[in-house]
Length: 282
Image 1 (cartoon, rainbow, N blue to C red):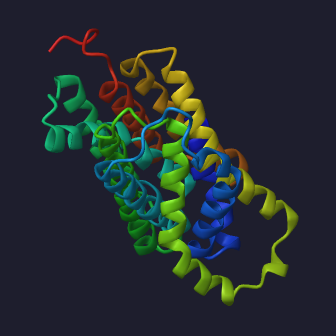
Image 2: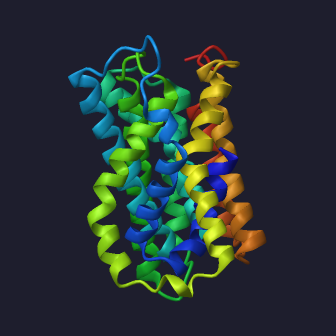
């Protein structure tokens, strides 16, 4: 989650260097090369069913393709701090969509988390993060769309069978993302001057690609082997914390009183939305 927050914040630098579709295409391409050895089916692993393939496509369409486009365009129009606050709504939106699509019960604590998330987003949207208030508002709206895309990714993942390894799912979903963005990426690559990119930007691009598509997935899945999923969700608090730290320390962004209030609400929403039902009586 700290890595997710870091690459969300640092992508603010990358969208200044690369056009959004080219950046997404390079990200999926670099990750595909790094995960090529994850694509092959392991000995004894069953072949993908038609339902598996459909779910993998939807996972990639929402969680990779649309999420990346909305997140990158959104970050380019607003601040890394705003991105962190809005992305903190993911657990609350996952709970909401689980209720709508999977008929899962929503506790009072989760309802409180959803209310905090909505309030935090509303507050951060009232703060001017750039000289163009309309751009900031559009950026925040795009980031909210990214949150819903990521939440759909999580909810759809619950429907995937346990017959496919996490590594193979990650590699296949990334390949679908590469296929979906390739026409747009090639168009922008044709007009882009690659010689203008400095080595530090290439290094940051490699970090972003591997962190977003490979490292975070492996770390999350490995962590879930050791602690219950109900407790794991609380660690999403590190996403807005790290994104805000990147914005303040590396990008020179400033906290306002409104942003502090939005940040507190966002963190409260994460805690409530991921609190164990055993610890919170209904």
